[in-house]
Image (tube, rainbow, N blue to C red; front, side, top):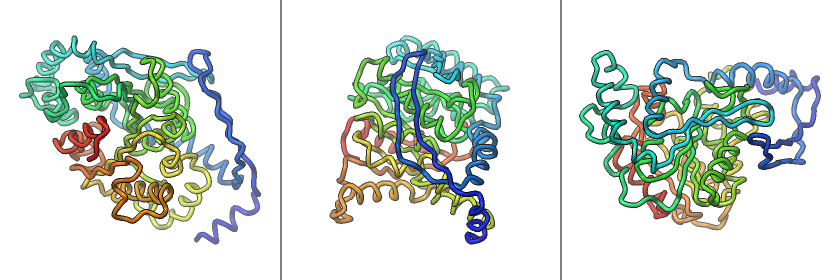
Length: 384
């Protein structure tokens, strides 16, 4: 099979591609990244990726199939004190998101609790209780959204802010519980959708999602007037790759690799039918612009690798990421020393990969006491 595809590609020759990107927000240049590394690619594969995968399949991958409850999720976030933001990019596209100030959240919390507890109690809204993980008996916002009591802390962690890179189909409006768990810890939060997803304009691609993740780190740093070392980026599933990309270029930015994969090439073995594996591997190796594992060694901040115990899609990926990183940084280290290296954490937590809000039926780690304890330990910089 591989020989067949190799012979098919050869007549199309090889081309070179360079990487040159300028990041701008509202006509203000914030960064310019240029790579002189020349990548040789088969023209046939490049055309297929550009015209079929990136312009067709890739946007479909990022877009949630059921948008009925997205506006409800957005309204919840506004009631939590969220401020809608739109970042205008140099290419004329825009990124839609919401910024949360914990001080404003404290002012809004009680009225939001009363409104949404009454809303979800209505008989016609009972199906939404499952989607949003609602505990109608909850006496606080965190309890209403089924978050454990230990997300509420007496003092905020040393990191001031977090922004979240969603995964495939995981638009931010799906999950008000994610910003809520950080707001309950006194942290500033930004959630957003990649360009071309829902209200964000443009066409998403692997490269553009990486740039969007990088841009949001600069936005949050500017808003808080702080260093990258006071911020965390959480990348969920496929979002772990653009999150790792951003963390590798922002000195001190901490990373939560939440149920993410190490390499797309490795993931293909689990999700691709046998007849298609040859072409899928070739595309992944030659044309996928980011892999989490490629950027991890460059990250100077702390990293948490989160893996669900019943996450069959990403089984073993967290430890693969961690061991590969440790082997690069400390090639002489013994295996028993790995958990102590690099201030990196591997958290094995309860739950699967796809939450009900993303169209799945599984419990995920954020609703578990131990999962939240591990998150707190990471945010405070203590060992798990």
